[in-house]
Image (tube, rainbow, N blue to C red; front, top):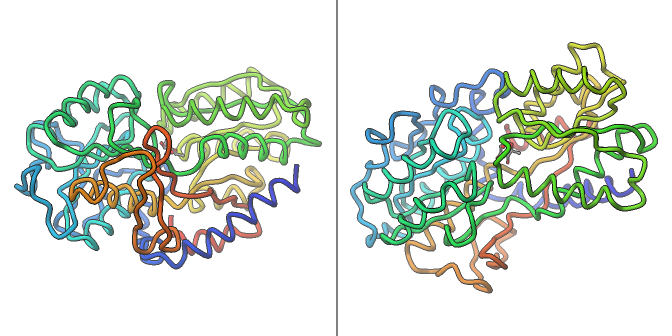
Length: 391
Ligand code: RAM
């Protein structure tokens, strides 16, 4: 188990060397607000404002900044695009970091980006933002779906009126986007979650539970399914998945759910939280309950948010991708679609200067583009990643 984890970590270190050369990574603006832990996040009020073209707002859709920039769907500015970014929720620091990558790409490519969205990870609240972006003439919508099917009709309507739709982070339904930018291979993330649980459970045995995000989240559900597939392999037979609960990417709900897990499962060994919000809450709960060394936390978290818990022993290892690069790639794809450089067809290739070592990306099955392998963090490398990523 440890060997596999190290292999994964080794891959990630190689990837880091590549990524560190990219404009998006090397210039990642590390505002402390964006990098703050989920528990203290106020994304709307800490909106990055390095560009007049970019803003973040939770305002009512009708008055949203989606209308900023008057470009119509047919005019592309110097390879850029007028894009509206709709994250799962605006008060999650993860999406502020991604938006910094979007802003950087918009600035590099000569376009604009505005971030708007709901303050809770709720698909029904995303729909009005999609509709407003559509009626106000955005050239592209870049969206992380709270529910793949619930947002699909509004996105298809947008596509029907000539707007390019790029999914990122959490996919809308196939057919409701032009390209989906996946942060990493889904099966690989699922296997990584199982491997990390195996690494940190004593002798890879004992009860494990999942603290996820929203019950409808496409990305978490796909990762959990992939993790379950891996857990079916003989080498993981000592691990027993006893529960899966949902904290909605809300620090308060996640905290309550993590506390309930400890109550309901006194023999619990590992909480797997594949969410940057949930993992912090779980680590805090383990610490506060004096369960450090008895219950371990792993999953997907930001280096900065989890630094204290890696060093404190609550979370010996966890993983994530370069979130800034994810935003950069999502905007670059949107701009390429708007300019017609790519159509969003399986098999098409394109390069994004500064990403992927300047090597081409290929649009794969279901029009998915993969950013690259995730990174594994532990006490030996956490300081480096905090410094390199800045989030
Ligand atoms: C949360 C969100 C996001 C996910 C990360 C890992 O911030 O659920 O969609 O990709 O965690």
